[in-house]
Image (cartoon, rainbow, N blue to C red; front, side):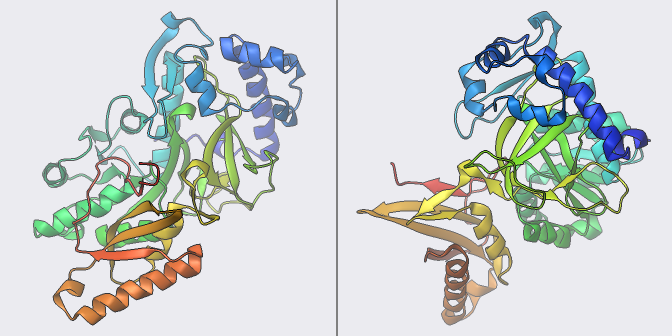
Length: 432
């Protein structure tokens, strides 16, 4: 059993007291690093000035650029001989960032992931197949250690090699998996190629999905295809990795573990806090990190605090699924557009397949959006007028939502490139 009832259900006043104690200790530790020592001095701030939780707003924000510019050891709050692990971000939006862990950090992180997985329903009797990349990426090892802490038999399958993944599921009676949403949709096509049905030919009963923004429509489609429950999770390497926030069985928002993190939602333009229920940029502060505390980190992820209490009884607040990133935003003809908007609309249209890609192009002085969409094979076996009708519907549906008219091409299933990691949804050719 891995159920930390006292921490997960403590009242908000007790939780705030615990957060303040840990924030004060964290700031005392953080200023031992080169970066925060200088940042506090430049701001005329001292750890003793943090007397209430509201005083966190006196601390300057930390950005990914700050982490990059102080590569590799500028954020260390302990000597290197106390470190046992280093992880790195993917670096898909620029130079990678690194995070260092002491033994105590890894143990605390493992507890968080185990708590999250147990909350969603993983048990010692489960066989857990981890289909994420191992190595510098935190997702693989984070879930691996968490599942082992719960006591589940853990298969470190890694990413890719779809036919082997299916064979492992069948041979070892896998009951729980960890998988990227876009890859889950692709893997289903491999089941079809093999003449297999996941609901009949495997014993998988639950999945942990995350690592890339995805819509509720995509989650529902995954659950429909496989016949299991798919639990949304949120993590980022700067805050450990997986285990930052997780869905409970209610599947209505992700509980963010506030005994380990302070969460703020700010307006990304004014940098001022927004009220619960309003979307903004997620800002996070570690509360138990020894080796490399990170204060008021601007994640660039867009979400909101869900008002009200969760029926599950846990008192830690919930965030909505990540709707996009401020740095994923596309600007065409003065309109701000996020890839998740397009995905949500496509998933609502009958006949649309499991993959799409957005190409941004420039003709003369005009920026254009070209979307290639996989659709069900039957549209290519029937009359062309049905294919054209579907294409026109997609154009009109998208136009009504994103306010510009994209060029849409419909392509056959599995004809677009597949990725084993995060799906590449946008290819910007405007500056090439």
